[in-house]
Figure 1: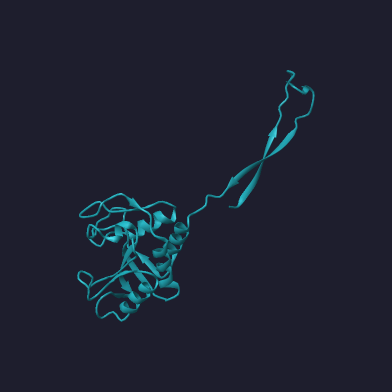
Figure 2: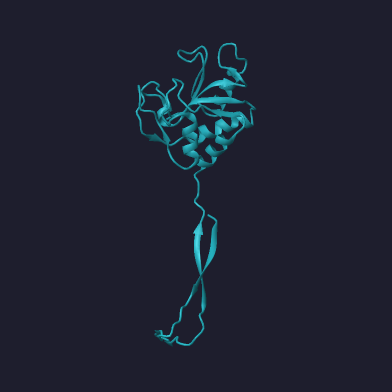
Length: 196
């Protein structure tokens, strides 16, 4: 941890009334400046916060600011990443099957988001992380899943030429629940999730 030393100047005041200490009178003496080091440190951000800040500002990653359903509840993918970037937990939705409350986002998932954009060169849009209404046991609510509905400017569908390679790249980074077109209820998005 980096420490910064600031010096606090303390000036002794004198007046016409004599001041006494155990060392004797200070009366008539000039004000003295005593330098006292004060320790301060920058707040340390967790590795999740640092990664989330990179995701938030990444030019190739778009974060949806509302739920796919259109609901505004401060648990969108944008809000989840912004909260994590500030060192807070991500909010879960509290409608439908969503449990409400908060969850920490997994570091490996955040690293994969950056890997897909930086190393693999994809531009993509994340529609859901911890928010939204999914199945009751969804890994979204554990902070270990995210959904993508656009890859390289094209909607995810059977005709998107990028979604299969995108899914393979997610699997290579440890995602064990990899779903997309061809899987039930995933014809319009890719779902990547990590083990509990």
